[in-house]
Image (cartoon, rainbow, N blue to C red; front, side, top):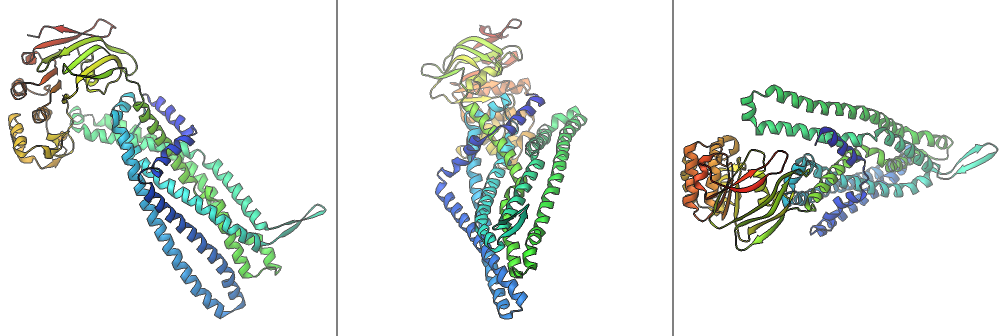
Length: 586
């Protein structure tokens, strides 16, 4: 996928209304097997939030009594109110601490559940493989590792913040309505009385501020979406250098890698400067709004104070209640940055979820069926590329138990793709592949996967290391000319970097001798071995696994003598290949 098309996809995801997609992301956890504990924790958090609002109401009432006592120089009331404030503050602290504690616990529980669910979907049906092949989603690792964290954290904080703001609003709006009293002003020849006038001022102030903040900060959603993608692309480039350090060093490719990394970082920098410019304007607006809100209620309520309609305590109570109402009405303003981050994260997760679902529901052109009489059959099999370009057409084949088949043909004709189709991970094409129901298939590609961990775990993969004894592991290492590695069995390392390509291929053969599959596929699995070692590996397979059905893809004629039949890919110009029986190469 080109950079422009990926950008177009990102823009489409960021702008598409996704109410249903948002609900599909949030809902499953709350109806899952974790629902009872999750709801109990959420209810406890809500109760604590309501308790915090109640304490805030009590402190607001305390303001009037305390400041009236100051104005009237009433020392006994002043002292009593200090004690009252002490226990109100202690209760507030306890409620606030445990609200945060339970919220963090619920967030981690939710994140763990969603991480397991998303990882399961991504790994199921080889979705991780197909999404990369089709390039329909970028940086899935980041979406699982980071975006799920943001989703759970911000969904809880924003929703609980909104709930707290609504409860605060309804709790203090009545107080503000009564303590502010009416305001009478002349409009032309008419005198108009506005009851609870401070409520209307708070509402007008918050609405105008929210509209201003939304207008200034709206571009942050798309910029945040792009920033996450650019950061992930840059990290992926760094990881690629680590994974391919040997080849890059041999090519002396450092200048080219530096240029590519520099270009990727330039996109981060450019987008970041755009975020900075929007954030600067947003901070100007929010800081002006927040600072002016401190003095605004005092200015509006000052005429009633100086006229003697209210005392100092009433003025402070009005200022406090106005601040609570205005703060509640300003939830959107205070949460705008978090909302922009949350929305960009939701867009990315919704896109990831849709891409994985698309793979799961993608119709299979190649049918896989269970065979009873033969280990492997191909029935009018055709192979296509994901874009529909034909690779192979009309393949027919039947293998018997113990057959050893060599597949040859020019590079790029589809030999490895045929093995992927037999493995069930290549759905593009038509026809059918039959595999014996109880068959234990093992595929050894040119470059086998070696997990990070102990050599024992790498040798046993994909089985558990506990399934094999030390004697079995030592024996296959010695047979595959890897005796020098026996002392490292329980050493953890990145063995794909510590072992040479030849050692890695011999390790793959050792796996085959351990697992003892009924059908073994070798895809250029000896390309890094010298002739003598290659002959040894094939001799081991023939001697140790005499009943295995062996299918080899190879370019070297030297391995032909270990096979009984040969099928050759042949194709004309601009024509899909055909698979036909051919004499074994001399």
